[in-house]
Length: 90
Image (cartoon, rainbow, N blue to C red; front, top):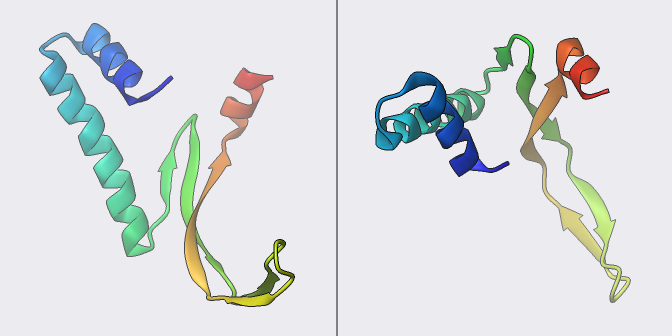
């Protein structure tokens, strides 16, 4: 499933035009991304929690050359599935 499939599902459920359905999906995605950029968690009941995790700086190794490389600290998105989602997938 991709974004277009989600747009079609929203369109089938809500009616209206596909452009409006795409705007709804885009708004949801933009809202989640915006909240994560601010450092807030996004919790969606029955789906899970989107959060931002900070990875510490570390030393990695280039597998091709064996050379050590410094990897800077960074923020990465994280998703924790809810119990309902885990049970539904089983």
